[in-house]
Length: 284
Image (cartoon, rainbow, N blue to C red):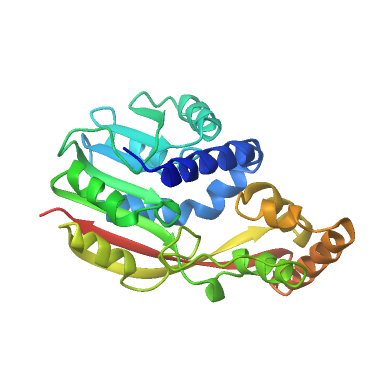
């Protein structure tokens, strides 16, 4: 049985992501475009092919689960899990528009998987694992539900210094109010940023490590104003920080954020670097 602390944490996460789900729907097209290269990388690294059964952990509004469903075809199937029913309602609408009948989405806690041993040919996950309270326990579950020879591929954020997309608002808000720094073993955006962290956990769970690679891309915005609106509406972990500021402080913080973001002007767009770790392992 889950401990009270874990149960409370999971429920708080559910509430946070349900709260921002409408904004994820609003910004959906932009998000899918900016993250497309990560989605395709995860699908490729999982070696997906026709007829396979795939599990996507923390699928949010549908990607990379939808891409996986297209890869495995009508003879295969994909299950996407996420805490937020609000996020999943958007995912279901997208899958329906694309005419996909081989995918299902379930509002479940991904830390304890409700599947039999050796149920899936591949498990994929994008920007989920670093928020889990017990990563080692969750990876043990992933190893359990993987079939022999099955692949696990996951994307997690690299370090803050390489990700102004996230770093800038946090650094600015710190000038106005205290921003708690999670302990190294506590859930947080950059918890698995170090090389070897997640790969070591997969190997301890009995998987064979294949690669741990840093990849980079850019998140494109029309303006600094668009970036600010995006991050304030989408980033559940940042919203409580903005809420702590008095009105004058918030105005000053937003002006500073826009000035910092404008330094990444590229022609007529804002191009903010994003750097991730892609970790791949296989069940012997």
